[in-house]
Image (cartoon, rainbow, N blue to C red; front, side, top):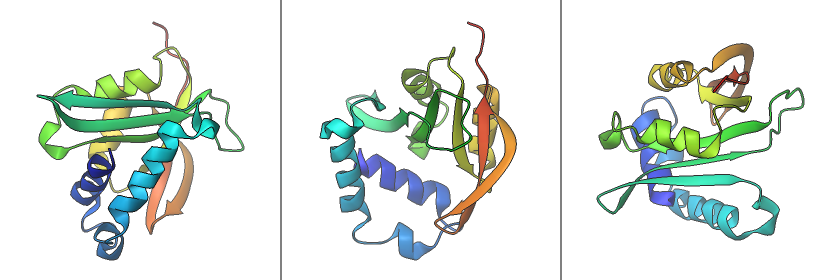
Length: 151
């Protein structure tokens, strides 16, 4: 899972995010600790985690949890959804999204502003920018929100 997380960041954010972050020798071990805690620490038991596989190999990861934004009016917040570039267009992304956030749930996420592919993906799945923005790792992120969808 850590490998997918790191590789996806490197594929997606190279040239947008500092190479110092993307090539940090501790990046993989930091993500390993993140996922180990998410899978084993009781504090994160309510988090929803999913993986996508193809031919026995991991190609994507996703994680959602209760919202952390102070103004949240939604029940879930998507914190992670990454699919290897070689697996884009396979259906892994929509499958992962549906696995961690029900289509009937109101939800939100933060997405890098210079990431039109991801923003288009989220729009296709009912998310729209709400005008909020923040900066993380030197990148501007915009918040996208999806109200409850009829299923």
